[in-house]
Every structure is written in C-alpha cells, then in structure tokens.
Amino acid sequence: MADCQTRICHGILLGGLLGTCGYFCAVLRSDVGAYAALILPITLILVVLSGTVLGSMLPLLFRRLGLDPALMSNPVVAGVLDVLGFLIYMNVATGANKLILEPESILAFPDHGD
View 1: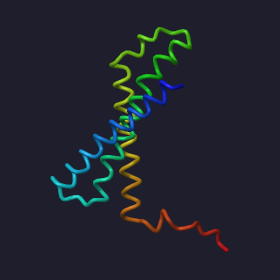
View 2: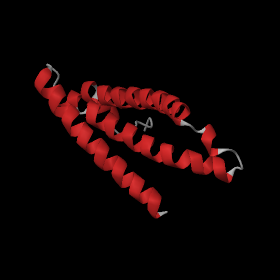
View 3: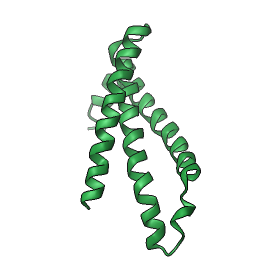
View 4: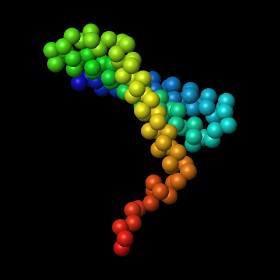
C-alpha cells in the first residue's frame, strides 16, 4: 500500500510540475485566457497520475490473476494511456467549456416544477 501512495505522490508532483510549465506556456504564448489555459494543467495532472498508477498496478493485477506480467509491456500500457489521456482531455475541455460559457447551467439548482 505504501508503494501505491508513493506512486500517487510522484504522479501528482510530476503532473503538477508539467502542468505548471504547460499553464505558463499556454498563457504566455497564445491568446487564450487564464481560465481556458487551466485545461492543460488539469489534464496533465490527471494523465500523469493515471499513468503512474496504471503503469505500476496493471502488472501486479496480471500477476494476481495468474497471467504473465510481461503481457502488460510498455506498448500495451502506452496504448491504454493514449486512449485514456484523450478521454481525460475531452472530458476536462468539455467541462471547462460548459463552465466558462454557461456557468449558470452548472451552478444552478434543478427546477422540479414546483
């Protein structure tokens, strides 16, 4: 369990460092606003965190299932993380788009027809 916590801490630290660099690059080198530039660091933190956790836990899961841990080789993990990274980015961008363009639709309470 301590190994998992260590990996999560490493993922958050690395993702935070990359996200900070990405945020400043997005703000300084493009004409996007500060809120829109937050999409990049949020995505980077989530992708790096999921990569560290999946990259360390999938071989252990395969070993526990009685399968060869080498089946979870680097190309397999990289392919899974590419798809996961794309899904994370699209969800973060969609959520940020809704929050920036339609904040009242997210923050409003639902009307129950009372």
